[in-house]
Amino acid sequence: MNNNNYLLITICNHGFSEEIMEVAKAAGVKGGTIMRGRGSVTDKVEKFFGITIQPEKDIILIVLNNKIKQGVMDAIANYHGITKPAHAISFALPVEDVLGIIT
Image (cartoon, rainbow, N blue to C red; front, side):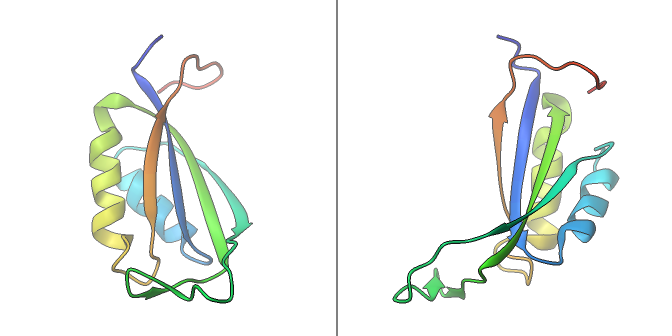
Protein backbone atom coordinates (compact mmCIF):
# COMPACT_ATOMS: atom_id res chain seq x y z
CA MET A 1 0.00 0.00 0.00
CA ASN A 2 1.25 3.45 -0.96
CA ASN A 3 0.89 5.74 2.07
CA ASN A 4 1.80 8.88 0.15
CA ASN A 5 -1.79 9.85 -0.72
CA TYR A 6 -4.76 10.53 1.51
CA LEU A 7 -8.41 11.43 1.15
CA LEU A 8 -9.05 14.46 3.31
CA ILE A 9 -12.70 14.69 4.31
CA THR A 10 -13.93 17.93 5.81
CA ILE A 11 -17.48 18.36 7.07
CA CYS A 12 -18.69 21.88 7.77
CA ASN A 13 -21.85 23.92 8.13
CA HIS A 14 -23.51 24.66 4.81
CA GLY A 15 -22.19 27.72 3.02
CA PHE A 16 -18.57 27.61 4.15
CA SER A 17 -17.13 25.15 1.62
CA GLU A 18 -15.80 27.76 -0.82
CA GLU A 19 -13.99 29.61 1.97
CA ILE A 20 -12.51 26.35 3.22
CA MET A 21 -11.36 25.44 -0.30
CA GLU A 22 -9.61 28.83 -0.56
CA VAL A 23 -7.72 28.08 2.66
CA ALA A 24 -6.86 24.57 1.42
CA LYS A 25 -5.60 25.93 -1.92
CA ALA A 26 -3.44 28.49 -0.12
CA ALA A 27 -1.94 25.54 1.81
CA GLY A 28 -1.08 23.70 -1.42
CA VAL A 29 -4.20 21.86 -2.57
CA LYS A 30 -4.97 21.98 -6.30
CA GLY A 31 -8.72 21.26 -6.05
CA GLY A 32 -11.42 19.17 -4.48
CA THR A 33 -15.02 18.04 -4.64
CA ILE A 34 -17.82 19.69 -2.67
CA MET A 35 -21.01 17.80 -1.85
CA ARG A 36 -24.05 18.78 0.14
CA GLY A 37 -25.14 16.66 3.06
CA ARG A 38 -27.48 16.59 5.99
CA GLY A 39 -26.61 15.63 9.53
CA SER A 40 -28.88 13.29 11.44
CA VAL A 41 -29.52 14.43 14.97
CA THR A 42 -32.28 13.38 17.34
CA ASP A 43 -34.55 16.02 18.82
CA LYS A 44 -32.93 15.46 22.22
CA VAL A 45 -29.43 16.32 20.99
CA GLU A 46 -29.11 20.00 20.10
CA LYS A 47 -25.59 20.68 21.25
CA PHE A 48 -22.29 18.88 20.92
CA PHE A 49 -19.45 20.19 23.08
CA GLY A 50 -21.57 23.30 23.64
CA ILE A 51 -22.05 23.92 19.90
CA THR A 52 -25.50 23.90 18.34
CA ILE A 53 -25.74 21.26 15.61
CA GLN A 54 -26.79 22.52 12.17
CA PRO A 55 -28.42 19.81 10.03
CA GLU A 56 -27.34 21.16 6.59
CA LYS A 57 -23.69 20.32 5.90
CA ASP A 58 -21.11 20.64 3.15
CA ILE A 59 -18.69 17.77 2.60
CA ILE A 60 -15.35 18.53 0.99
CA LEU A 61 -13.27 15.71 -0.50
CA ILE A 62 -9.62 16.35 -1.33
CA VAL A 63 -7.01 13.83 -2.46
CA LEU A 64 -3.63 15.08 -1.36
CA ASN A 65 -0.07 14.04 -0.76
CA ASN A 66 1.20 13.24 2.71
CA LYS A 67 3.74 16.09 2.38
CA ILE A 68 1.00 18.74 2.62
CA LYS A 69 -1.68 16.84 4.55
CA GLN A 70 -0.91 18.14 8.03
CA GLY A 71 -0.45 21.72 6.85
CA VAL A 72 -3.80 21.68 5.05
CA MET A 73 -5.57 20.16 8.04
CA ASP A 74 -4.00 22.71 10.39
CA ALA A 75 -4.98 25.61 8.11
CA ILE A 76 -8.60 24.43 7.91
CA ALA A 77 -8.75 23.98 11.69
CA ASN A 78 -7.19 27.39 12.35
CA TYR A 79 -9.49 29.36 10.04
CA HIS A 80 -12.69 27.29 10.07
CA GLY A 81 -12.38 24.73 12.88
CA ILE A 82 -14.91 23.57 15.42
CA THR A 83 -14.77 26.86 17.39
CA LYS A 84 -15.46 28.98 14.28
CA PRO A 85 -18.83 29.55 12.55
CA ALA A 86 -18.08 26.85 9.94
CA HIS A 87 -17.63 24.23 12.70
CA ALA A 88 -15.40 22.26 10.34
CA ILE A 89 -13.99 18.88 11.26
CA SER A 90 -11.43 17.11 9.09
CA PHE A 91 -10.02 13.61 8.96
CA ALA A 92 -7.77 11.82 6.50
CA LEU A 93 -7.93 8.25 5.21
CA PRO A 94 -5.12 6.52 3.33
CA VAL A 95 -5.70 6.03 -0.40
CA GLU A 96 -4.21 2.90 -1.91
CA ASP A 97 -4.18 3.90 -5.60
CA VAL A 98 -4.69 7.17 -7.44
CA LEU A 99 -5.21 7.59 -11.20
CA GLY A 100 -6.00 10.69 -13.19
CA ILE A 101 -4.48 13.32 -10.93
CA ILE A 102 -1.03 14.40 -9.90
CA THR A 103 -0.73 14.71 -6.12
